[in-house]
Amino acid sequence: MTKLNYLYFLLIPIVFFGQNKPIKINLLSVTSTDSIPDERKFIVNYSIENTTDKEISFFLNPEKLFPAHTNPMGTGVFYKLFQGNDELIINGVFYTKNFKSIDGFPDYSKITNEKELEEATKKFFEAYMKKQKEKEKLDSINGVSSEIGTKQRMSDELMNAVFTLKPHETKTYSTTWYWDKKRYFKRDEYEYYLDEKGTFYVQFFLFLMKEQYQTKLTNEDYEKLVKIPNFIKGIYQSEKIEINFRE
Image (cartoon, rainbow, N blue to C red; front, top):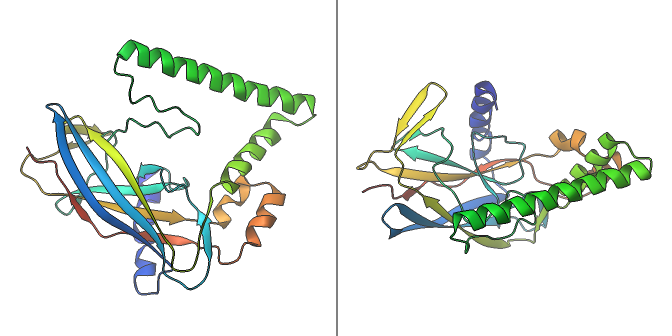
């Protein structure tokens, strides 16, 4: 994502602040524990709320979290990390032991042996790639080009990400992050240091789009999409909440 595009997405939320927002994303709590000397565990609780008296829908995978400076075309929840008032535009601060980046990825959090974890992950990806090739082969047998087959799978994935809330419904989620207590980060020419005495905050965002996904959807699925009533777009943000990076 270019710096210009990122600045553009930073400015969009201003449009929504003076209006009645149909959706609220709420950061409920962030707690931390140091279970081992070199690792801090954060439990983050958040909710997504329909503030209207109508059923609403939008694209969202509510349990997938990404840094806000990454690709905003994703359908997950995005977050920003701040040191004081300054945003930290860096990757790699948090990691999770539940692998959700690929649908169906097993939970290997109980495998503590590195070699066993590496072998299990390798086997999963080999099986995953084999499955993808089998899909492509089936497309070929059915006379479907690789390009069309890929678009169909992308379209299916997007339509499966349509998220619906009933009138005034709130859904609550929890995620667990880990931090290895690394304090120095470098991204391009920028350097960042997490001050041991600093005050840090985290903030969540929803980047909700519709027409921007038209090229990723088949014509049939896009026609279905435009017929969904009260399909919500826009960018929505939570309040900032403090997160503990102190010694």
